[in-house]
Image (tube, rainbow, N blue to C red; front, side):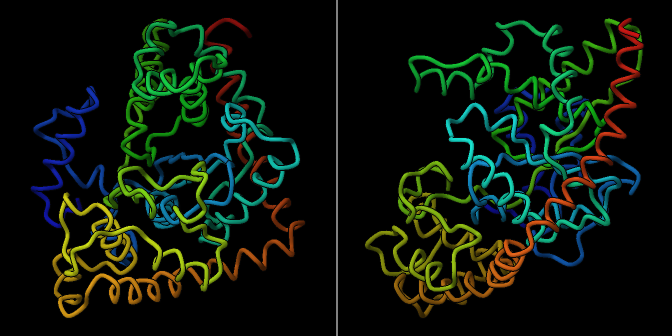
Length: 379
């Protein structure tokens, strides 16, 4: 559900904290929603300042295929806005995390480059942000091992995402268990103070906060900050074929998602084929996940409230509404699609951006890891 007033956003923050057992350094009943939500719409031109422009922000995205509409509305477009509010903004193509998913080497290489291309096409600006490939900064793996020595297997197996994946697989690699430790290393390596994440990652971020606290306490220092999360106010975008689950790159049905490199005709077709229901009117309801998902997409792209969309669509049935929304989505994504195609013809430029990002990231990472090694006695 999308909220439009401060008090309701506060309720959602409290609900999220309670749901995930978050132990924030802020009292739950004193949460300032602007700490967690980034403007009234992800497409707003007047997003409020959330912090000093000298605070470090970090986030990453797995290269498991071309990002889709859900990735864009829920994360990437928010990153683009945050470039105006934080410095430095550090964005990583977290390819080490993707090793927990099977892929042949050539596919993985292509996906890494495609992910970087898509981020640039969406508006990540190398002149204002650091964009790099995680595995090319070896300090991630070094800090991951140091942090692994501060956490127990039992603590890692408490994380809900681990429990869910363990139920789905008979056998699994230890990488699936230790995934959150690497995520913590990604953040702490740059001593990031803010991390834009989805609600499903809050438990991972809480582990990061615990590891930072454990390290500081064990060695009697105040080195790692207690990073805070930033939640987008965009609801989780759902599958177009099964709106009970989120839109996912791993879904076997291409009809379930809109990839950011899809052409306009494909986008229109996907929206027209989206699962709704037999009720003709267009209105938002938890009992109508298919239609509500389309309204969420509409709201995120235009900045219109749910009530405004219901009013604008009052003379349409769901079929007509799909046609209307298909045009909106196609027009919104056309510049991104065009830029992706342009960058795919200029891969040398993209690789140069990643190399420049690697150098900048390595400079920060080396300094911080050297200080960690001094603290723990490795230097």
